Length: 65
Image (cartoon, rainbow, N blue to C red; front, side):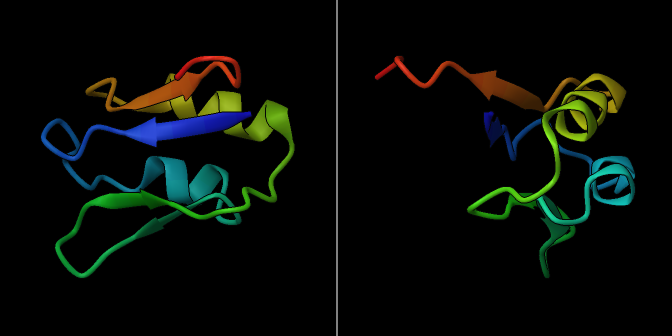
């Protein structure tokens, strides 16, 4: 599963980092960034996406361009 963060929406709450720490990290500007390759299982990544309070994390279809 590939994901993208909308840094304009991200408030840096860190919930996604707590749920999937091998896929997301907080940067120096208190925004979340995707770790590539994402090493958490898909269930954890999906839970992290669903837990974002401002819907800043999106799942990207691998076939999208």
